[in-house]
Length: 410
Image (cartoon, rainbow, N blue to C red):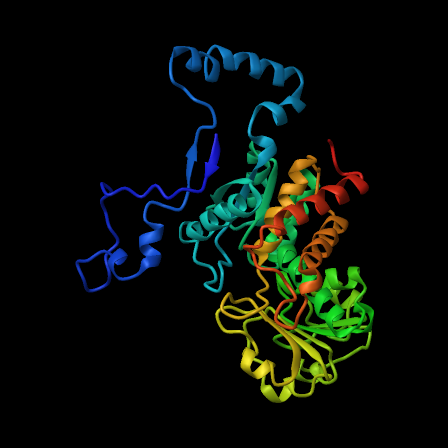
């Protein structure tokens, strides 16, 4: 069986959601509800069951031969089931988009959306799994028990700092890729865009000083990846200011963050850190004053990625920055995770990787940046999600990196 991108809405369904104060269903007021009616995905057989001969092969007695073979040689599960091409999209509903902790049921439309993006852009089947628990160990134990059915696990919309521990513990216990997209997908696309922005300006990453607003899942992952890629320096700011070793209020995650960032030893506010900075990366949802943006270095880059309201509005950013990117689709240079996660998982699954390494993520960023090629411009430092070259390029780069790093099994 394989998840298929179809919308199985049926006119016979009852229990329409009604618009507040009206007897009419919400479908008639908002096309988003009409599109979601019945869900955004279904399951479809990949083999026919037309007669008793087909039935005897697809189910009993034929299926028993396959089961017995897998019992004797467990690795055959990759060849004779869907395991090697399907990902579990797992959430606890605690950090859904900009909506926050809305619970597992309310998170399902997002998880369904993630699943169809896996299929649409990477050819990877995915199953949404919303868990009715938020305890780290309960989440881990549940996913570990579900894992035999899947070739990979995409963690989604789990609040920080629990998301770091959930991912780490699952990576320790499973021999399949575990990837928290809110962290690493965002980091991969951000690095790709930054590489091209630097290339456009004739500078190397090592010449740049970046400031990140937001020390949650995305901010920490972006900082780690920029350091891995050779950024000159990067400082990360949370609500209380720049994360620095002299602060006595840091969580363990932020203590670690302080250890590998902020080589300049900057203290104080985000605004103070922005003075003379080459790059602003926003993943906080806050607002940065125009006066602070104006103090950045000449030819700066502003990646204001909060949705729906960027930390710096593009009209303001363009007054001071050479390259501007957002998380929105209605402005150029959209930093969109869909550019990364389908190809990353497709590449990992292709070679049956046991995990997704830092090298694989860096390779994904380089491949994504390379798609832009000679068309590089201030309003085109990152390709469109609908560019058909994206997923194949990322897939091939990730698969090659997995083989080079010794985590591929085919």
